Length: 368
Ligand SMILES: NC(=O)c1ccc[n+]([C@@H]2O[C@H](COP(=O)([O-])OP(=O)(O)OC[C@H]3O[C@@H](n4cnc5c(N)ncnc54)[C@H](O)[C@@H]3O)[C@@H](O)[C@H]2O)c1
Ligand SMILES: [Zn+2]
Ligand SMILES: [Zn+2]
Image 1 (cartoon, rainbow, N blue to C red):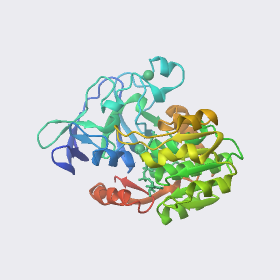
Image 2: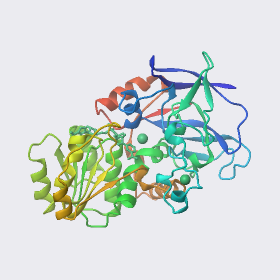
Image 3: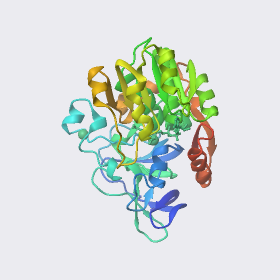
């Protein structure tokens, strides 16, 4: 067993950094990764805040990148020394959804149960030996993780670890929402409600495909300024009582696409009003499990409007992550600009406070 520092959320005792023990012998199909960078995403905060209640001790973190340091029997996709991004939705590669090229709806994954593919958890708490489950099969707020082979995607070593980490969640989700889920075309109009790490990646994706106009909406002036820098042609405050009318004035009859990247019922309910007839609202933000929304179905049917659910940017990790990395290296997707503060694991609490208060850009935890 090796002892490594990790951010463990204990439902009974809260979040703290402590040592966990990871196994020396890797089972078949497993990969050990020395984590170098892990972004702090609102999905971690959803667990911490009880929107998605934790029922067992969990190592949080799911937006990570690092270097492969060991492989179990049968692993062929990566080798020791490879730089990899972690994918929080390790597909089974056997079910009908995987076979039809839709791994983001895989029915065989155990990631959403915070398990490895064989149903086990790899690590225990050093203090008392109790199992500690990896959030989404990763638990990336740890210096070392043991994950499924289908949860690692090699990237060129020229991609900085901070950028690679963001490709593993906010970028794959935000850019993928544009290019995959919505398939936005040049000249389509769009509005993005919520400009945190995910929403700003949506804005970047919209610039990449040449959408126009692109209207960014947030409550934070700092985030709105960032959105302008990343390609938004207009910015509006989310508490503007005339928000819908202003979006219509800027886009004609409403936007072709409206992205909600917060996970708030009230802003989700706005989507049908923000889009033009024939347009689509895209649900990128995640609500609490039990949230419900009220929409007028007549308006949707009558005007041919659509609502699209977006899990992980409808991404095929093995295809889309290297594609995003290439776009970054070619200068077409300046992903480094999405990185805010970098902090050591011991400062995760302050990074989560910043996320809750919508301060700064994406904070990334770095490991030496
Ligand atoms: N669909 C997926 O696969 C997927 C993947 C990753 C994250 N997510 C979800 O996406 C959401 C956003 O994640 P994030 O990390 O970018 O969060 P974040 O906290 O960084 O960003 C949320 C943004 O929304 C803004 N906001 C809050 N209330 C607002 C309002 N009323 N009007 C306008 N703006 C408002 C905040 O100021 C902030 O900038 C979360 O729910 C997260 O769980 C979904
Ligand atoms: Zn995330
Ligand atoms: Zn599958």
